[in-house]
Length: 143
View 1 (cartoon, rainbow, N blue to C red):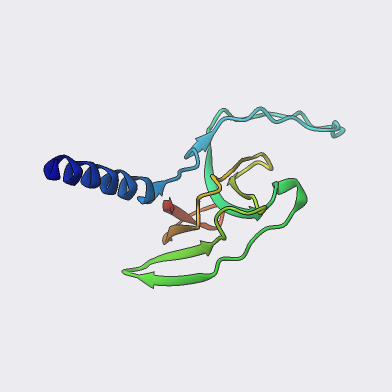
View 2: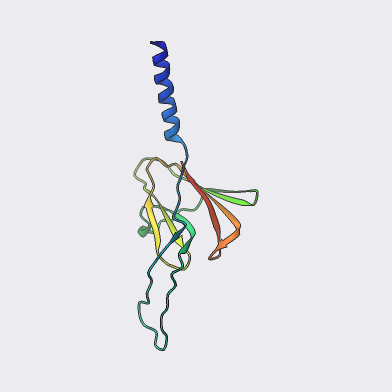
């Protein structure tokens, strides 16, 4: 009986640790869009490219992005030439944190609400490489 209780406890503890583990949250690296002019420009012919558009930057929002309540990171540190910015959130409650992924060469972004259990997100950038003037995002981890 003692052993079965021990295994039950260990199973519960391991399951809880797994549930608390950081999760990699990633925006798609590229998107394909179909853009067109809203109005014609006299004397010019529009052309388009089929080149996929690369992820340029991310924004965290307090509520849906349409409400325009973007959040500033709480801290930032540089290690080995990489900058990591961290945002902290209050898990649960009425606040709904959203992530928006923005892409170079378009005003189209992808957005989604984060799970209410997320208490922080860290984004690691490589300032030596750039997309549309922004440092390349190497990793994003939320926990």
